[in-house]
Length: 216
Image 1 (cartoon, rainbow, N blue to C red):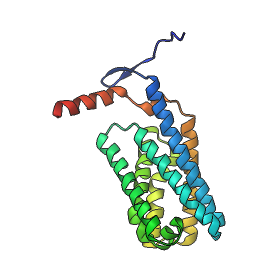
Image 2 (cartoon, rainbow, N blue to C red):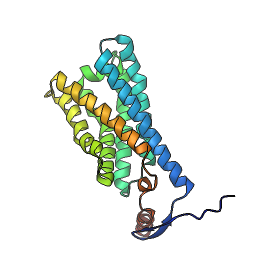
Image 3 (cartoon, one colour):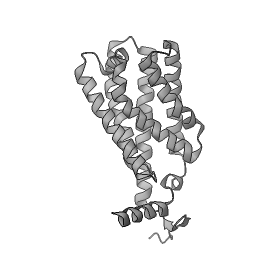
Image 4 (cartoon, helix red, strand yellow):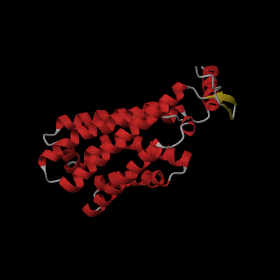
């Protein structure tokens, strides 16, 4: 029988311990990230190397669905002290997912082709990537990771560049390839990171929860 005593951490507002549920939450967060990153990387590879193959373009739709599901799982399980910010990122994801469903059913072309040929669709599905950018920003602020520092401005730059038409095609391809590589690097590094830092200071979460209850 395991008699190991739990580690007691000293937080800003008191002591706390990390239980198995906390660890499972982090693993779910990282699994979602990995699914999203690998789906995005495979989809980007198809766009960059097989973009003229109709069959391969059709494959982008299920890959985008997997990307959205993975991101959604991560946004549900990520630890963010500011509840308003956490809910905002989740709301962005929901709006983006609904917009993607509308685009997929409104246009006759495959989903990816519809987005490429009709940049106005970015005003809808862009909310999903706004949520992703928020996740990158949180990771950059908390862990000072180079890849997330680059991804935070890169994602909106590529989307706005395509929406407004100020990026040449080669520029879009370079940014897309860089995005796919850095996103994969980020997800892989998270897989090997110690778990407690991703959980954060649980005493802060407890304090904020008590504050909300007192103000209710």
